[in-house]
Length: 195
Image 1 (cartoon, one colour):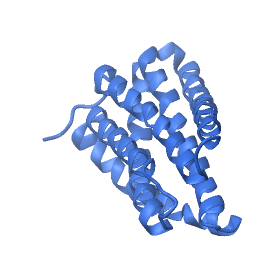
Image 2 (tube, rainbow, N blue to C red):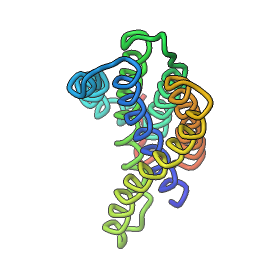
Image 3 (cartoon, rainbow, N blue to C red):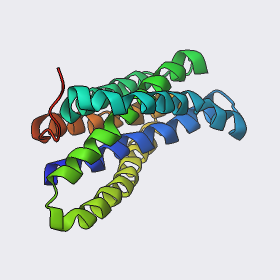
């Protein structure tokens, strides 16, 4: 259970960072207004909503470990893709694809991870497990953003804005990579996948 709450900490660590640095990139590099920046996140939200309709069907067929690992792989790939961002990129070439992939990954990750954590908690401690799950989400977002902004600050001294953002996002790749490794290793199935 401890490893899985660690995973719950690591997932939002990468997510909070990519949303923050995407906003910096759109405003400081692409020159977007705050409204345009907010609207630029819609592909992430749309992918999240579409996958929400499918995840409930995929988990019973394939199990939490497979779907959760697939989601974390998509988060890892999306963040790695976004970390290659460059000052010459446009929204379409630098952010659109990663936003869609990150939205897919986020949805495929959250429900299976929560189900596994809640299933592995002792029945007498389900309330505490639920609270810990939410606390880890908040703490993970703060931790990830702290680490990535520290890397960004160090990189910004010797590089341009886009390069510093890419460096911070590259550091953030560690979070979903660790989460995937822990989840794939320690998550016990809560349902039997249907063939």
